[in-house]
Length: 72
Image 1 (cartoon, helix red, strand yellow):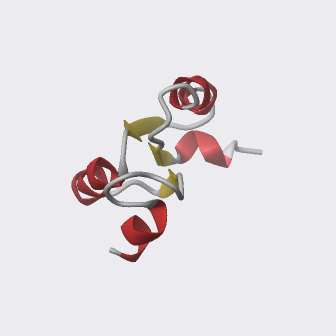
Image 2: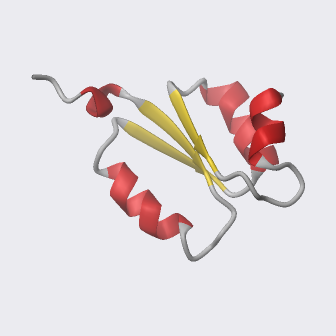
């Protein structure tokens, strides 16, 4: 069976500088392409430019939280 995650372009949005690199290392091994943003504004801009297949976003972030980003 084909590993479906290996075909996915994932945008990961996380503002916590301690958590982000841990998940980045784990996710990078599981997906085709991993794009990482540091906050909701950068995440939204990357989404508009890259059009990833899936987004994993933190809910609580400064400037634009994950819910606001998803609505936009």
